[in-house]
Image 1 (cartoon, helix red, strand yellow):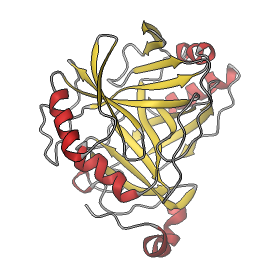
Image 2 (image 1 turned 90 degrees about the vertical axis):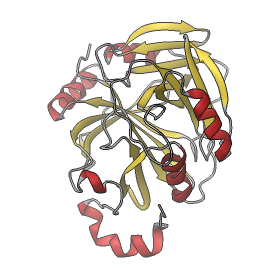
Image 3 (image 1 turned 30 degrees about the vertical axis):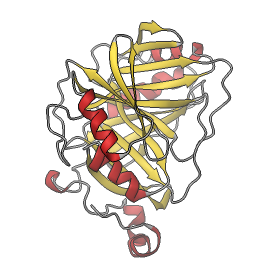
Length: 311
């Protein structure tokens, strides 16, 4: 069993427009945009990161906004809901705020004894706020969201699968243990991990496969402390038969990827070096930061491909 994985690092999804995406996460959810860069494999597309003040692992929602991309179709083999932690008693405040901003899909629910508020992102993305009594993280506050109700970071992620068996076995190998169950949902927890240490698997055998597009999660990333821990995880996975990519430098973390039996793309990302490696903390997310291999494209990217984002 692997011992290095701490919980979630980030979740990356697809959007249909950068401005609407940035407005939703900063002006409605009150998160901070901590990085404005590009998709390393498709530099004509932004890669936007939102989180707490510094983009701490376990708080960061990231997006590839492909302009006018078609809407994804929900189904099996995907991360279906990304859940954020919010203080106990805060959900009525959030429900009122969502009504003010016209957020769609707002629905209160209870799961495994926790109060949740479901809601949709601008591309139909599945989200939830979960009331959490104990969370050590300091929230980012802004755009009218006070500290006593502000989002702390991730609470959990839901994976919707036709068969949970092989993925459950993988999570156990990654240091998670089965903690609870309600109907078709089974919760796995990484005990001793960070505050974003829960994965819920919803098993729906007859559900058709998802079709990825705007509103879909592209991949889910798990945190390790550093490159040494990442290499140990990579070796452990490969020794067990998993096909894992080489280590890839993403400027703000190092990453490895592999596809799970249920179809979800997993990433293992390092906590180092962090989002303030190329700009000071006070200025995070303002300037367009490009990886060295794409710096020569800056003029064309800023004038022809990347839509201006007005804060």
